[in-house]
Image 1 (cartoon, rainbow, N blue to C red):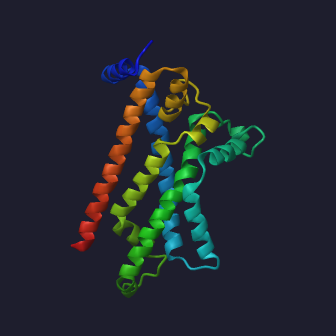
Image 2 (spheres, rainbow, N blue to C red):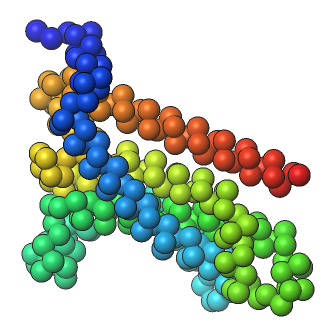
Image 3 (cartoon, rainbow, N blue to C red):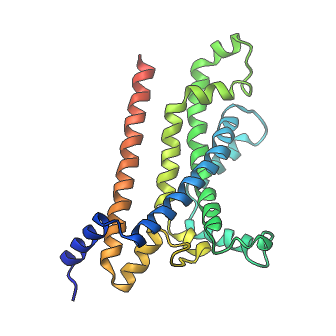
Length: 235
């Protein structure tokens, strides 16, 4: 019977030897999550800036809803995307269900509100600080969106990293829409869940070490970038 110690040593061996299955799972996880982050950023950053600067009836309710969507239950998102992509759903003809594309869609739905809500707060703070200067240059709030997004890029990178951290650690939604198919839609989180239930602790631990390393790196990067942004503002 394999002990936890033996499984740990085997996990380290798999990582050292760059095990093919391990690399395939990590590669898919990064491809899916990074693509979802790009989509979430393209949608979330300008939308968050718009919500920070625009004034319209029901704006406060929209902001409340946006903030609430930061905590969307992954399994509910997975179910919603599953229904949309299923054969009887509106996007069924595309055949995206149980493919990496479906996983990207699910992750993008989860992280877009996070990026949008965090960018909204950043842009709102910057507008409050620089409103007089920007108005003196003839910029209205909506015309100042690009300027404020660029000025707040350090803080916005932190928001993007937060979205990536949520995406790379996601399991509930992507296992529903991806199906956890070996060699095709199996990511680090879904593989850890499956291999642990099967008793294959070596692969699960190797993937867990990689995932934990990524999580620590993301948080460290967010901390460093945030500190650098604060120093820049103080200067």
